[in-house]
Length: 129
Image (cartoon, rainbow, N blue to C red; front, side, top):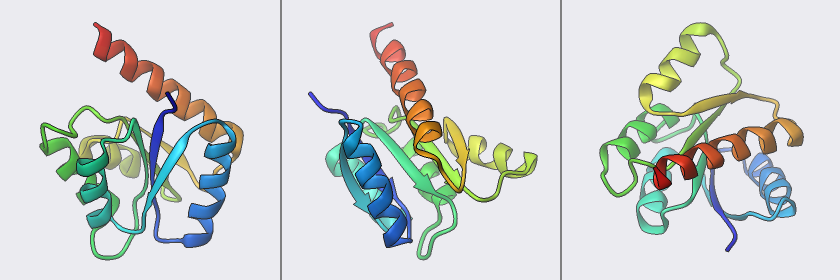
């Protein structure tokens, strides 16, 4: 069964690029354009992983990550922050908000695939332990 990844970004062009890259790697994808949609879709569809931008309208990625972590139904979904903000303070804020890891924009297909595989393997180990 294919793993499902929720892509969350307010840039439709980037969503299209990420969707193609991930589907070419064998993943199913669903998309959201803001944090509110991300929380709703995560709750309804329970993706295997969430790849989420931080700076978005209506609800940013940090707020959405906190809500996803607060919900017992979605709490254990691995989340990867995709952000142009990569200072030590930004990284700390991402992790404190509930992200498992972060990746700097612009994303390369190789970096993205590596981070996703690492998080999915780590998640599988936690679920089977």
